[in-house]
Length: 168
Image (cartoon, rainbow, N blue to C red):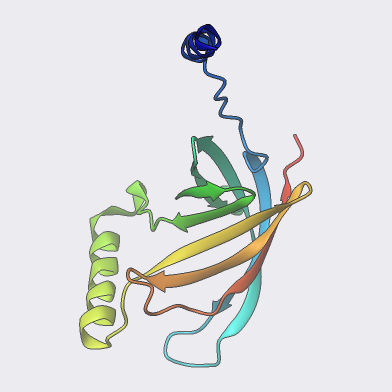
C-alpha cells in the first residue's frame, strides 16, 4: 500500500499543470446599442435616447480591458474611452473611464474641473462613474448601463444595452 501512495505523490508532483486560461467569448469587437438620458441645461424634461458605439474587449486572466468609441461624422476624430472590469462566468462588469482627449487642451480640462467642483461642492451631486454589466447570450451581449457614485450610495436608473459581434 505504501508504494502506491508514493507513486501517486510522485505522479501528482511531476505532472504538468493543466491550468489553461481560455479566452472568453466576450473578447472581440462589438456594435453596442444603449439607452441613456439626455437633458438640456437646466431646462426641459430628460429624454431617453438610443446611441450606437463600437466596443472592443480584451481579456487578461479574469480582467476585461477595452475601449468604448462613438461613431463620429466623417472628418471628425473619434476619442475612445477606456473600459476596465472583471469577468465572472458569462457576466462582465466594467467601468467606463472619463478620458480627457489630448487635443481638447488646457481650458477644456479646466472647464470640466470647474463643473465637477460646482456639482460636488455647491449642488451636492457626487461624481458618477458609468458602469456596464453584460451577459453573454449566444453570440450577443445583453445587459445594462448606469452611473454610480464611488461608494455606490447614489445610482442612476439602469438602462438597457445590447451588442452584436461586429462583422469582419
